[in-house]
Image (cartoon, rainbow, N blue to C red; front, side, top):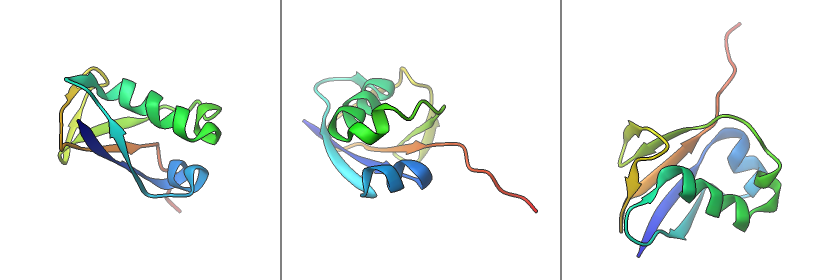
Amino acid sequence: MKARVLLFARLRELAGTAQVEVEVGEGLPAQEVYRRVQEMFPALASCEIPVAFAVNARYVGPQHPVGEGDEVAIIPPVAGGG
């Protein structure tokens, strides 16, 4: 069972890609999905920044279960202003 993971901002830059498919099993928590992505892209493993999760375009907590075909967005904080 796979889910599509979307990476944004600094995470996308470090991974060199905007999306990847991850094996999720049954109900893998969003935070564990991120750990699997970090294993796939070692540059992300050293990136200890807080992230937000969205599953199917809805913000969720890190323990939210991810299922087959879900779209998981991993969103780091974004600085802005001016």
